[in-house]
Structures are given as structure tokens and as C-alpha cells.
Image (cartoon, rainbow over the protein chains, first blue to last red):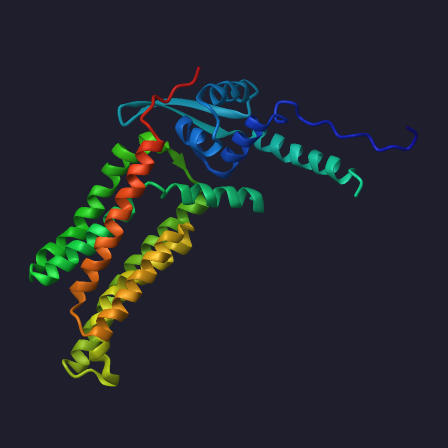
Amino acid sequence: MKGSVPTPELNRLLHEPARLRTLVQLAAVTKADFTWLLGQTGLSRGNLSVQMSKLADAGMVTVEKRFHNNRPQTLFALTESGRQALVEYKQNMQLILDGIPE
Amino acid sequence: MNDAIRHIEKKAFRSYWDDGLLDIMLGLLLLVLGVSWWQDVYVLGAIFPAICVSMWTPLRKRLVEPRMGYVEFSGKRNLKVRTFRFGLMAFFAGSMALGLVVFSLFGGEMPFRASEWIAGFPLVLIAIPALFFALFTSCLRFAAYAFLLLLAGLTIVLMGWDPHVGFIGCGIVITPYGVLILSRFLSRHPLEQDVIT
């Protein structure tokens, strides 16, 4: 259509409720382990595990494995690129939502 | 941090206290203070808060953290926690200092019929931090505890009872409620391995 504003492209990695929910939780804290994210997001262990692996592969979160109180612990933290991607996703989504007629 | 993230952080911080451990400690503290006052075993009332403080971290690490998970809040939140702790210590130190000044100035003859109200004062001393804790963490049940403590303070003043009655009464209410919250927390959060595939 002539003169139409191009629709902003949404980051497909973030445009998935489970991953978005997890990233938003991580944006609110400095670091969190797998169990904490499980409780906060309400996702199943398998689902969260898969989503965290995808986010880690994309460089949006860092993964740190350690032993804490004699138990294995996997800590996650949002990277700067993850934070930036989250901000861009919000801006693009806002543009799309603003385009919806009243 | 925008409003949405701030709201999520606040909610996460509130859920950090949803295990009931602090409720049990508050309830037991009130019970022990009441019994020590009643039985004139003041040393028990003096050392029990120190026991609670020293038990807090090991209990949380052993009982709560493996089930709730581990989280590091932002530097801003940690600063707020430190400020709250400092404020709490300053409040108790200030209250003790004020008590000593009033006692040294007036002795047994308090002005403005204060001696009639003094029995409720120790409960108010615990109600105020409980209320501030409720505001700080958004855990509204601590506001209810503060209200209960104030009500107990008022009741013992009006009925002419000794303060230990209020302490024991509040402890009897808060401790089992804390146990209920803890048992619910333990049943909802079974111990599982933290793994990622």
C-alpha cells in the first residue's frame, strides 16, 4: 500500500510467552537460579530448561553452574544484549499496538 | 527500571518472604519474651533474639532456599534492605535510650498518666517495626500482626493486665499461623534437583 508505515519486525526469539516471561523476570533481578525462575514463571521444568537453553544460545542470558550448599545450582543473568533486545521488543510491540484502530 | 519491571521486582521481593519462617520466629520471639517476663527469667528474653538472628541464615539456606530458589536482587534493593536493617536497629536503640531518659527523669511518677499506658508500650515497640516491614516487603500479613500487637497492647492497658499476657497471646496466634504458612510452602515446593538440559 502506498504511503503505509512498515510494520516493525518483532524479535521471534522473544515473541514467545514463556521466553518473554522468563526474560522479564530476569530483568527485575541481578541473578536467579533455575528453581527461583521455576517458581516465578510457573513454567514446567522441561519447558523452562528448553527456553533457557535457547536464550543462552542466543547470548541473551549468561549461565553459571556451581555448587551451593552442597547442591548443584544453575544461575542465570540477563546480558546487556538481552536487556537491549527486551527494550527493542517493547518499543516495536508498542508501535504495532498503537497501529490497532480504536 | 520502568514501572512494569519495578512491579515485577516488588512482587518477587514479596514472594521471597512467603515461606513462613519469619512469622514463626516472630511468634516464638513473642512467646519467649512473654514467658520470660511472666516467670522473671529475663536472661531468656535477652538471648532469644540473638538465637533467632543466628538461626535465620542457616535455616533459610537449609529449608527455604533449596525449595524457593536462589535470587540476587538489584544493588538498589540491597541498599534498601541495609537501610531498613539500620533503621530497625536505630529504632530499638532509640526506644531504649528514650526509655532510659524518661525513667531517669521521672522515675516511678510518670507525667500525663503515662504509667497507666506504659504496660502497652513493649507491644507497640514490636508493632511499629512489623508495620514498617509490611510496607517494605508488601507482605500484608505483617500489617495484620502489627494491628494484632497494637490491639493486644490496648487491651492489656484497658484491662490492667501485665504486658506478658499480650506477648503470649500474640505469640499463640502468630506462631501456628507461621507453621501453617511454612507447611503449605513445603508441600507446594518439594525438594528437587536444579538441573538444565
